[in-house]
Image (tube, rainbow, N blue to C red; front, side):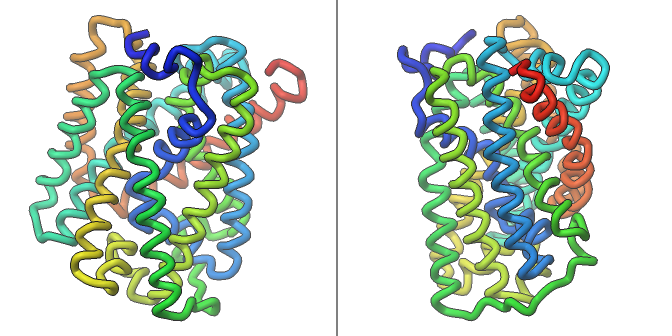
Amino acid sequence: MRGAGKAGGGRGVSVPALAAVYIGTVVGAGFASGQEVLQFFGLHGVLGFLALAVATAVLGIFGYLLLLAGHGLGATSYGPVVRHVAGPFVGRIIDAVLTFFLFGGTAAMFAGAGATLAQQYGLPYTAGLVGMAVATAGTVLLGLGGVVASISFVVPFLLAAVLAVSLWSLAAGTVDLGFAQPSLAAVPNWLLSGVSYGSYNLILAASVLAPLARLTPKPRLLPGIFLGALGLGVGALAVDLAILAHVPESTRAEVPMVLAAARISPLAAAVYSAVLLAEVYTTAVGSLYGFVNRVVGEESRLFRLLTLLVAAAAGVAAGVGFSTIVGTLYPAVGYAGFLLLGALALAYVRKRI
């Protein structure tokens, strides 16, 4: 595999690197912008905290099962993993859903870049979209090694920025614990919302986790994935609290966390916007790589050409708008992802992983 040596560092992927990749592939435009956290947790009010705990547990437990399956098979993509745990028929369904969502997730990240630059700087929506598409495609062309290196570098800055804005919001304002508008949430039921959030994010992360598992020594899988899930849970909680400190204004913003940062100062908003774009980039890279690697494989001669074509197509699809993609595509894929959760649990019980 091109770039595998870099990813493994000669001794395998480390626990912090594995956690960073997990966080980086999930923490993208929807998460860091606040739009995703708003629609799955914030609109549920206090019950959203319970939904978040459920989502964190799903990401930790089933993320570990996914890694175990990928490690045991020595998989180079997620396709063999889902077919092994779910069987040929259901496996094909999950495979198709996962592949479709990776394309949709790539489009969502491009749309998130366009929305961020439009809201913060008044630039044309297409400017951020095209810029992100070019940066993402360029990184994916470097192979898995480039994907892991880029994500691992960016993640610490991502979490630091999210926590900084959230802590300031809590210090400067009061969290409205009485706020709740579940009828407007992406998934109206808080429990299903939590499971769905974990489900579709696991699908998103599977594109990188499955091939990365074979480069990671088995004893590092459990601490790495749980450290990543914990980081995601804490980060999402921080974003949720910041949103609830600025309701109802935050519920009407395309990028709620930039609104919260702007309450600190214009400089803070500018810095957070830059970090948000970096977060969008990490998820876009993981999604685009996963899609192309699944369709043709990294060693294929068509890998480079397909990377460019898919990036262009995702850019066109991103024209429907960021919040629209988050509110429609994500919950739909989350429901479909229940198949993956069930298949992983059943495979574990049957000792197939």
